[in-house]
Image (tube, rainbow, N blue to C red; front, side, top):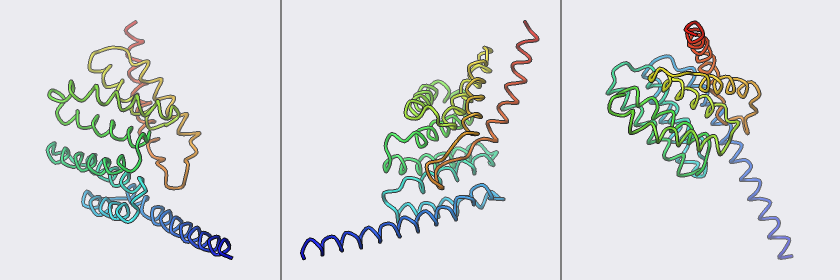
Length: 222
């Protein structure tokens, strides 16, 4: 009888956990599209704050803080004033640190961290290029080691190599190969869940066009 009672209690807890997880996923599914549908600069802070609250309520989940960070990244894309852009990127890193604390060695989290710092170089290339570049390359390298088929990690590494090649006037073949690989991975991507990161293909296609231009110029010089 005692064993039966224990089984009943475990079954109840399992049912409650499943219901809670389903509610969490539904909440995330309802809120993730808002990042991509935001129309004004002012839209992003409330979106990020909403994900932060979800993260506080779901202490074992990394995705809310990831999307809070991504909200600030997308906000930074729309800001022209460099100090203000930098502040938004700092907010992105702060939110992402919470995701990293929940989920260590997460390819998506580490790749996004490198991407944010890559954008921060653009705010002050002269000061930050030398100090941040090794850290960024290490992040992208680790993200790819953890998941070689992560399309975002491949794209970000390709973008970093492309920018470095353009800066030093060297070939972009390796960079563009990674961009091409990322597009193929985007096309075949099967996210682990409905709330897993699945963004980035439009940027990959834009870089594909930049690669075509750069490779054409290189070919014309030979």
